[in-house]
Image (cartoon, rainbow, N blue to C red):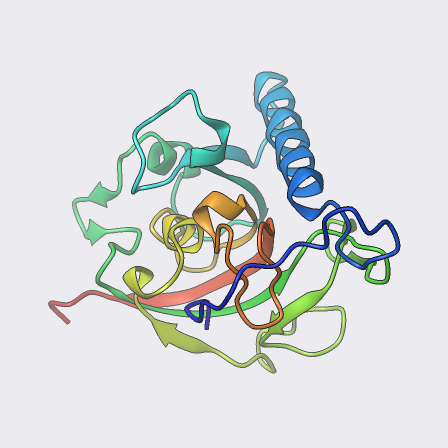
Length: 209
């Protein structure tokens, strides 16, 4: 999952191609999502966050951030976590980079010429589905397939999201290609692709356990 890297691809100036002008379209798409999140946060809309990647330190570069829309909230206060408070008297409330996370997820690219569908439960338009651990349009937790891995085994944007989630959280996560696969393709994921993930964190286990 999320680790294979192959050669670069972009359909450039061929206006009939599936991924015509893909880099520019993804740049625009992510910037629009960033601005939408900024507006929602400033307006006091609950559940929207801009989280800088754990691997970056330039706060002025929008492509150093992931955008999160909380679809369902588990335990804990998200604002405290986003502000950097991850510990309580009972221990860690979010995974750290070497922990083992148990999750189910679905991944899409942005809409393209042939691929466009409406994703539930927030009814956003997404493109080609390159990976999924459940079937149908609705996530049924009892029927989903779960994967176990550490945040340090996936791309930076996905890893960053996991390190801020609580068990029981379900997030819509928008990852710019700079925190995904960059200028390289990976399987059916095109180069320069914004990654749109629906992630549910079931549980995590610390190294000590």
